[in-house]
Length: 296
Image (cartoon, rainbow, N blue to C red; front, side, top):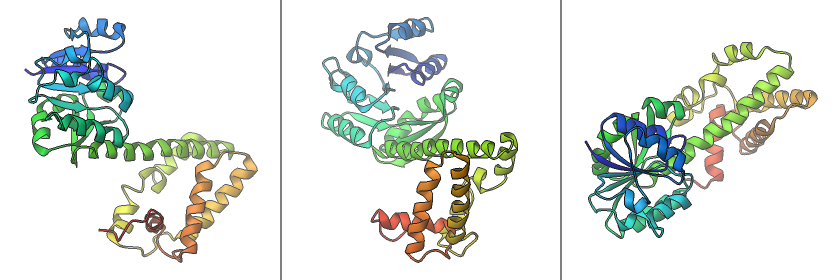
């Protein structure tokens, strides 16, 4: 049984702390909301008066807070836990914050010879309740191995992304795709409905094509990431078909914000002479715009 400080009992943090209690760990909690503290006290959690108070004699510190500002304040504020944190204690920051904030917090803790891993979570509140989160870990392998027995209580997939800060970077990249795809999905279903299609029928069809199966699972591993730009579907054709869709959405007055931006990217690829390459070669165009070197 470990002694765990848990700071931040929001939508994700509260069920995570509850699962640690169910696994018979000693959990000492802190949150700015007295209501959530009252609830979790009924489950057997100890209640701390401050972040500094929460970490006394703790083996692990969990933070699950809204932004880097709150994490920094919890660590280094007037009653921050850094002043009470033992050098044997491991901070596990599961918050979703800016990579620059993770870098600053980890550097400041390292100057005090304190240990930290960043461990933002993937998946949803339901997974937090079920203990089936995905953790993206940045930190020393030895620190991850130390944390594994605790993390395995909370999740069923733990991915080591590299040194401290790389877990946060992976989370930001992941959320960029998922949140942008959410808008594209809404655009697509709106387009389908405005076209007179049954939405469930549209979903059934798209689940059986790249639209639903996703480029990560299908086209990219087999094409551009394998160095294969032979066209399964050409950039020229993608540009043409997207043009047809945008002309139709204009007549239907349905939003196509992401579709319009995507067509601009295909136009740039064409202007770079890549029109007859596979459509995944758009990745090469964007890498060039980002100033990245040859693919490894």
